[in-house]
Image (cartoon, rainbow, N blue to C red; front, side):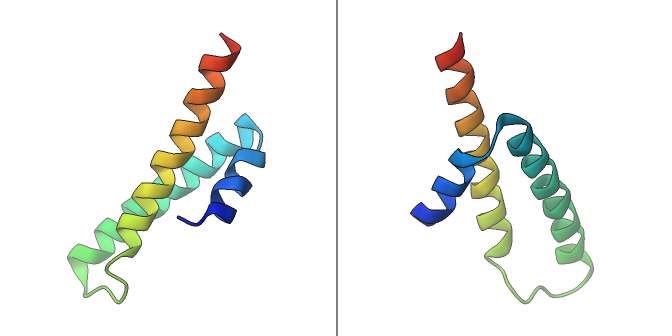
Length: 68
């Protein structure tokens, strides 16, 4: 993940991040199903989505810890 993308995630509000994580998880489920049913063109897409979810969750957790 590029630094620009991480800064964009950090600039989002917590609610936007939760929505973003939900969208990515839905895309991840669809990609996993697609991978089983037919050949995938972009093999690394699942990995990048999983990484993006992890970074987003980390940012949310950091915010929780700094508030509490």
